[in-house]
Amino acid sequence: MNALAGLTIDAVETYAVALPTIRSFGVSGGSVAVAGTPSIRVLVKVTAGGVTGWGEATPIPAWTYETAESIVTTVDRYLAPAILGRPAWDLDGVTAAFDRAINRGFTIGAPLAKCAVDVALHDLLGRALGVSVGVLWGQRRRETIQLGWIVSGQTAAEVADAVAEGRSLGYAAFKVKVGLHSEAEDAAVVRAVREAAPDAALWVDANQAYTVDGALRMARRLADLDVTAFEQPLPANDVAGQRRLRETSPIPVALDESLRHPSDLATFVKLNAVDVAIAKVQRSGGLTLSRRLCALAEDAGVRLMGSGLTDSDLGLAASLHLFAAYGIDTPVDLNGRQFLTSSYATGATVEVKDGTARVPTGPGLGVEVDESVVRELAVDVLAR
Image 1 (cartoon, helix red, strand yellow):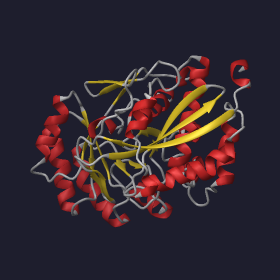
Image 2 (cartoon, rainbow, N blue to C red; image 1 turned 180 degrees about the vertical axis):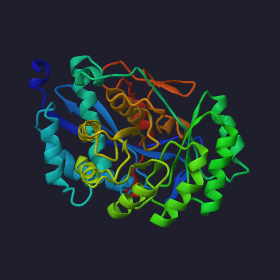
Image 3 (cartoon, rainbow, N blue to C red; image 1 turned 60 degrees about the vertical axis):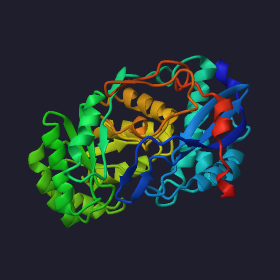
Image 4 (cartoon, one colour; image 1 turned 90 degrees about the horizontal axis):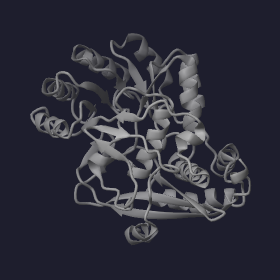
């Protein structure tokens, strides 16, 4: 701690960067990425005592309410002033300061913006000590994490090509986005994936697209396809519906958007309304609260799965450290490499081979950010 005791937060800077988009991607709420159109990510740089750390926010209005514009202004005008001069090591105090600056109300309150700063602080602390985030925590149970290949938007007739592409790159697990077609068409897409990959791990994600009755009908359609989990079929705040669905669904129901804060998971546990909890760093406002959520799930006997937000390599690394710390051994949805290029990471970065990511071991997150490239990629989202 002596190496950290004198570090106080001197500066917090935001950079909205335009990253190359490899493939198009959509969820039930709308488009996430469009091939040929740059994907905007907000990178946050925190400086303390000459040491820097980097974090990332992934604005996806089709998934949550934060935009690139709102993330930049929230960090610059509210979160940064709330923590300047604070000890960089005081992650709990930073979290409390965030909640005073942007109250969490019914949800967590600007989780993506808060996440970018929290992750940057973790990166900074690891770099100050010369250790990885896992060593900083004293917690890393896995060295590799298996990734899932995303199937989204295709019709049943198009699925075989999408699956073949993933398998050619070594992926042996597939996540299918549903809620983009009719129930019958959604079920046909999932069935086509299963036929194209008969031995692969397979789970589906509805991103809140269904009613309770529709979700139950879909779960029954999927029951004979060896689907490991039905992710977030209902609106995030439908607690009563989730309890009813969990009692009747023939396949496990996983919660994602419903679990913004650890207290949300506590509510579902008390009501016996959760089979599987999804750990997602950005959704939960960063690594500090994500660790609390994962520890609660583990102590309550709730199975953990992992997911991300089409992050670039900073977000990918943060998620890998979290999932490795809690020993998540099922395939996870960290799909950034499938859809975009992290042009700013010109040195050490995350190694992904044959659908498996190696947990970084370098200082902090283990991703080397080239600030000169960040500045070249930066766009003024507030001027648009």
